[in-house]
Length: 57
Image (cartoon, rainbow, N blue to C red; front, side, top):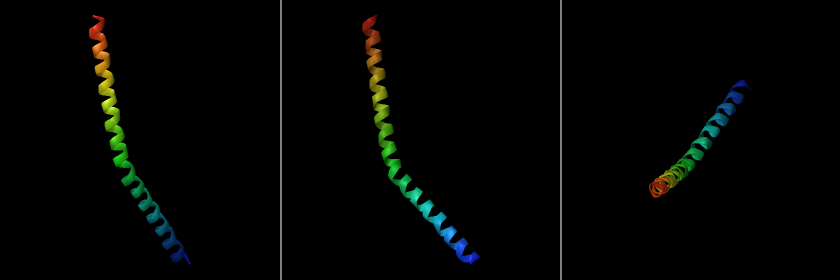
């Protein structure tokens, strides 16, 4: 009985690990794309603010 319980517990832990690995595998490319989009937006905003500061001078 004890062996059966620890085997099922180990299987459950393994399944959860596999599930998280799949979530990370799916999420990382999306996060990377989002990060690139945020970086581009930040650069665009900084460029706009820099152009505004030159116009104010």
